[in-house]
Length: 97
Image 1 (cartoon, rainbow, N blue to C red):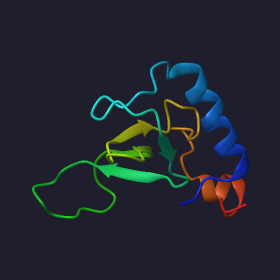
Image 2: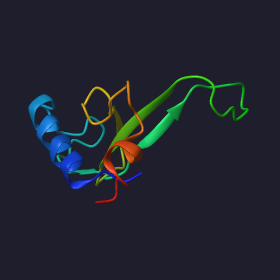
Image 3: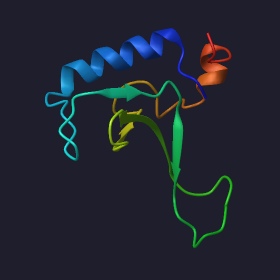
Image 4: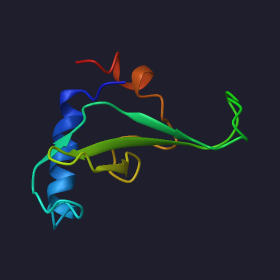
């Protein structure tokens, strides 16, 4: 699901506040791209897909444009997803503004 403009602005503001050393620890380049899409990390169930069972973490990815090193940042911790009401599409419309 894509981040809307408000979420993108909030993400950049929050990252600028908390991310002090923006140099990649693999290649030492300071060039990153922030993905504009939410991703999910699901609880492992022995290789089976179990829908509706277990924890799911909403994530934002940030990748080094030189070497591809990718960081996963928890969207709840960034304040982009409310853990008590995680269904962004129902809360904010389509989420594709």
